[in-house]
Every structure is written in structure tokens, then in C-alpha cells.
Length: 449
Image (cartoon, rainbow, N blue to C red; front, side, top):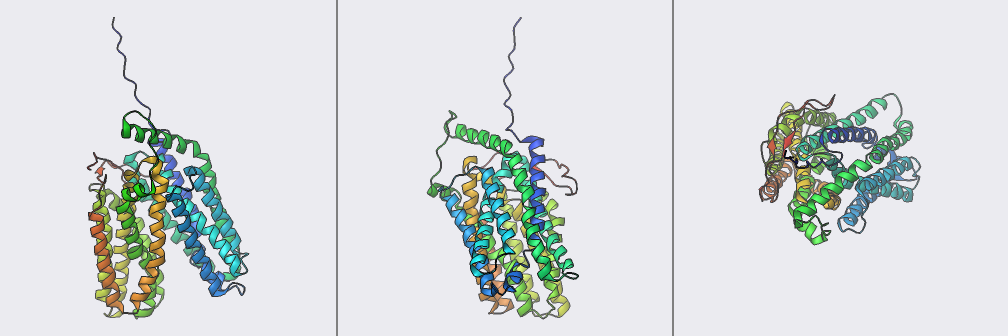
């Protein structure tokens, strides 16, 4: 009697499959808790610091400038490989710095204290943002990444807006100065569950990353030897289109919505300032409603298509504002609200395409450095975008929005030229987690090079 030996079936990477997806979704919702707590203070931080006699407006400016510089500094140090912590401990250290930073805001008292608190918050954000994408990616199979990153974006936007709304309602009954003294410690505490969960997941994440790195090495040389760490030049060359698109997205898109659009409503549109809050609310609600169907639809197309949709949706939104800027008040308000919806459409397309593209571009062992490199461009865009917007506001509504629309169209060509493994194909729909609505998972097709 002959014996048939079945070939060994390799086990899936630890932490992946259905269990890995559940862990990743849990991490997304715990991240949402910290986002909710941050939302309670982020619109009011500048006001709180500026009203402190020992800090003043200049001290508040120092706080934000220091946070931005520290954020970019962390990204640069990680991208150059000067600091190489594990993904989990990078995230833990980042959130720990955020805990200390937000807890110290209430005791700032001077410009020097504002610099110290800003440095802690900026270091925390820079470290955590570099860690969270590789951490979530390590827990997921490739076919789950697009839907979970889409969920993450919707959760973070919804919780951030909810936190700001809660504080806004509380200020109706409690003076802001008294309220914020308590809310900053609450915000700091909101990061602690994220620290605990990251520590609990450290073994699953480490095993998944080790197996993925071994697979990368085996694909590279056929013998399973560990691949050499990429040089900074090779990393930048591999991520060049990612870097360019991240810069354009934050320079022309996100920073303009957050800073220039409210300023333009105040300075250039003849409507009450309350419509700024309504615009932000419509944008957040649109993201929550549109994220699932947009993710499902774009799952049928290459990632580069989704990124072009992002830029073209933003261009259309800007042109709409240019066309309605000098119309009657009802038309101006209607254009402003439709602008918020179109901008949300672009954000939804971006959220479900950019990070899956990043995860497919570099080996697992280089994800932290690649994410940090992309985040450095986010910092540059968030710093330069408001300066660009303020300069354009001086030219009037039509030139402002027309120039931004043109820059967004240029960004669509950056997305069109993106090389690498960017094709995704759809998979049958699967129900999302409770309370998150129905999201859609996609599986990766054979990559075209």
C-alpha cells in the first residue's frame, strides 16, 4: 500500500485572517476614542493658550509651530533610519508623548512651557502616525486592507467631529476657561487605552511583520535570506510618486479645506459665519455616508484611478465655489454645502486608496520608514498650504478657487503617472463591524509592473 504524503500547507501569518481583521478593527475603534477626545480640545487649544496671560497669542503660535517642527523631525529621523524602534513600541512611545503633552497644556503658563508641550504633542503625533499604518497593515490580509483603511478614515472623522460638537454644547453651560482645564486631562487619558491595546497586540504584530519580512526576502533572492535595509535614496526613489501625491494632497486639498475655506467664508462670502460650522458638519456626515459605497466602487479600479478621483473631485469643488462666489445668498450657501460634499467624496477616494498603495510599494521591513517619509510631506503641506491660501485670499474669491482647482488638476496627473503595484480587484461584499455600516472588502489582483 502506497502512502500519499500531502504537501504541507503554510500557516497564514500570525494575526491575519478573520482574527487579524477583528484585531485591526478593534484598534481602529480604540483609535477613534482618542480621536474623539482630541476633537474635544483641538478647535479650542489656540483660544485656551492665547487667553492665558502668561502665554498670549505669540505663545499659542509657538505651541503649534513647535508641534509641527517636532512632527516633521520625527518623520525625517525615521525615514533616514537614524532611529529604528519596533512598530509597536514606536506607537506606544508616540501615544505616551501625546499623553504627557496634552496633560501639560493646562500648566503651560509661559512661552517656554508652550514650546515644551508643543514638542511633546508633535513628537507623539509624528511617532504614532508613522507606526499606525504598518501596525494595521500587519494585522490584515491584503484583501482586507482597503476596506479597513476606509473604515479607519470614517471612524476618525466621525469621532473627531463628535468630540468637537460635545465641547461646543458644553460651552453653552460651562465657561470655556473652566471647561478646558478639565478637558485637556481627559484628552490625555483618552490615549491610554490605545497604549494598552498596542502593548497587548505586540506579539501578533511582531510575528506578522517577521513572516512578511521573511516572505519579502524569499521573493527577493529565492533563498529566504534577510534582505538588506534600503538606503534613504532607494526608499525615496521607490516612494517618489507617493511623496509627490501626499504633498499635493495636503498642500492643495486638506489644508485648504481646514484653513482657507473658513477664512474665505469670513472674508469673501457675504454669509453668516455659522455656515462654516454647517459646512464642516456636512463634510463629516458626507464622509460617513459615502465612505462605504465609494470604497466598493473604487475596488473595481486601480488605485491610481481612486487618487485621480480625489484630485478631480476637489477641482470640481473649487470650481463650484468660484462659480457661485458672487451669486445671491441662497446660491452661495448651496454652493458651499455642495462643496463640502464634493470635498468629502475626494477624501473618501483618498482614504481607501493611498495607504493600500503605500503598503504595496515597499517591503514590510521598510513600512515605518516609508510611512514616515510620506508623513513628512504631510507636515510640509499642512505648513505651506495655509500660507498659500492666505496669499490667494487677497486676490479675491474667483482667482483663489480657480488657482486651487488648477493645482488639483495637476495633482490628478501626478496620480495618473504613479507606477508600481496599484491594481485592486473586487471581492464579494462582507458585513462590517457592528455600528460601522456595511463596508466592502477587495482582493488584490496580479500586480502589473
